[in-house]
Structure formats: C-alpha cells, structure tokens
Length: 453
Image 1: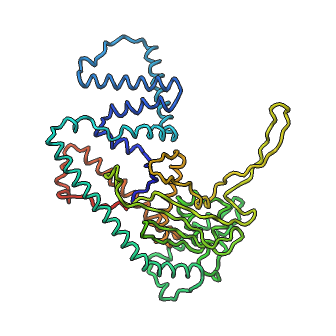
Image 2: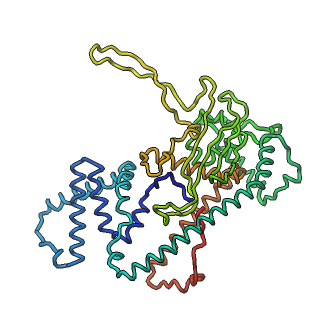
Image 3: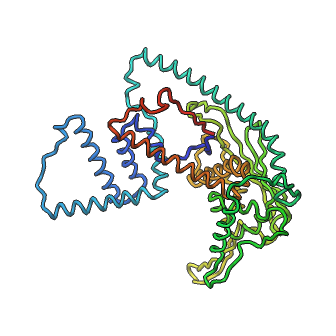
C-alpha cells in the first residue's frame, strides 16, 4: 500500500529515478541552479555558479576532449593553499546545506518539474515506432485497471477474514481486562527456554531498577493477585518507537485507561476506522476515540501509470470532551508586552498547542481539491499520520501481544539486518569482474515476488 497525502513526499531516491532520462550532469546542474531560490547568501551563489561551470566544462570535454582542455597556468604554493581552503569551505557549506531539511524540501519541490523530462531519444524515434509505443501504453493502461481490480478484491477478502478475526480480538480484550481467566489448557503454550528467559529478564530488570544511591526500585507493583494484564496497550506504545515519540509523560496516566484498540474496515468508500476504547477516567468523558482513514484504489486519470495500489489520502479525527483543566493538548503561557511609547509592561496569558499523543485525534484537514497545494508542514504531518494509522492497522492490532513482549520488535530488527546483508552481497557480486549472474542458483527465469501492501 502506498501511503500518500494527495501530493507525494519526495526523497533523493526520486532524483535517482530521473537520471536515466536526464543524465547526471544535467540533473546536478539543475539541482545547483535552484540553490539560488533557496538562499540569498552570496557565497552560496558563487559556489553554485562554480559547480555549474565545472559541469559545463565536463560536458564540453566529453563531447570534444581537445575543446574542453583549458591552458594550464603556473600557480604559486600560496595560491594552491588558498584554493584548497576555498574548496574545503565550499565542501563544508554544501554538506551543511544538504543536511538542512527545509532546504532539501524546497529543492525537491522545485525539481519536480524536471523529473520525467524526456532526454530527446523518444522524440527522435520514427513515427511508426512512436505509434507502436502508444499501442503498448494502451496495453499498460489495461494492466493498471486490472491491478486496481485486484486490490479491490483483496480488500473484499480482508473484510471477510476480519469478521473471523473479531472473535479472537474479543477474547484478547477479555483476558487483558480481567473479564475472562484462561484455562490451564489455553495457557499451555510451548517455550523452549522459558525459565532461562525469565532468569535473564529478572536480572536485567534488577539492574535497571537500581538507583544511583544503591536502593532498588520495582519496575512495577504487580503481584500474584493482579488481575488481567495491566497497562497492556501503554506498554505497547512505549515499546514501539513510532508511538513512543508521540507519548509524553503526562499522557501515560490517561493511556493506562486504554482498554482496547479495534479496527473497522469499510467497503465503500474504501477505508478503515481505528477505535480507542477507554475506561472511565478523570480526563475526558468519551468512552471511545476514533480516527477514520479514507483510501482510494483507482488510477489517477491524469497520471494512471503512477498507480501502485490502495492509497490513504484523507483522515478525520474526533472531538475529545476534556474535563475542566485536564486537556493535555494545550498549555497556557504568559508573555510580557511593553508599550512602544509609554514603556508600560503588561502580562498577557496565551493558550498554545502542547505536544501530546492525543493530538493524533486532531489532524490537519485535507483539501477537497486534489490539485490544491499544501504547505510543507501540513504535508509532513499528514504523511506521518498516515504512516502511524497504517502501522496500527497492519502491525500493532493484529500482533499486539508480540509488541507487548517485544518479540515483534526483534523480528523487525532481523528483517532490516537481513535486507542490508543481501544488498551488500549483491554489491560485492557486481564489483567482481568474474561474476556471471547466469551461474547463480535460481537466477535463470528469476522474477520479483514481493507485493507492496
């Protein structure tokens, strides 16, 4: 599933996709030229112009080696040292610029107009060849329509199995909230090294619980009389980095009341709703907080070949009915103002937004017009929001107990390491001059089997 927000979030991987049509030198020249738009510093403009000149000389040299050769001039040691210092300063400046997210975002926005620009090869082809290319594009369009139909049927299958999953989710909810005590037979789950794991875990917990003064602090206050699984969902939130970054200290007492997270799928329009079920608490009166996500599963009429599957493009939160003085999403600050002419000072009170997990239920609105431009901050917020909603739906709710124990996190770490290792092996093979891909086991007739969901 591709996660978007009406407009794509561009990374440098996008630049690489354009290289086959534009070329390294040309694309880099365009990159550097657009630094003029991103900064008003004279040194930056000088740096940009010098790089473009160098690239232009490189092009001339590639076309005509003799024409691109400039007469050499003798340089003193002082001039050479000055040149090295200038080059070092330029390198540091470029490095600093390329690490600035605002500069990168603005640059990427400007580069969009160049991506996909033909290099001239296709336009130079004979009319009969262009005619056949159009026929192939019509075939490709038919394939895209079938792909959209496939994803719609997958969603229908998801709805079918979700009805079966609900029984299991309900049983989990009952156990977590001490509404049902599992039998001995239901608790008979095999574990090869359960005793060793328990010993190691207890040692780790003891070490972590030791304070600087040598006293020990218990990691929890649970005992054999504890009912259910306390703080089940809060523990999951704290285990998952994506959610832990959102949760503040003052959110935790509220999230201790979180009893269940449910997913409801919708057929038309395609989408899903995440329901957060809370017990009675001192913070708000809502029993359930909801977050609705709407998806589209149809190729764009203006750009049908960009279709890669269902895409989240809109979300809607809910109103939280906070009890008086308990709203953790806002804070009150005091500011002093000085009168310009009289010099009198007054203190004003202002309410501003406060960092909190519960801002998740108040996302920025998505424009109804898909062609309407969004500012970069809104686009970044929505993209992050869509990723979180998708992750809760696809990973956390179906595998909640494994995120509670941390096993799901270990699996994800191993998956990432495996991918990096495979990539490194491929690089080594490509660098080997004697490498023959046809001799690799399974290379013959090999095809990608991954499905982007």
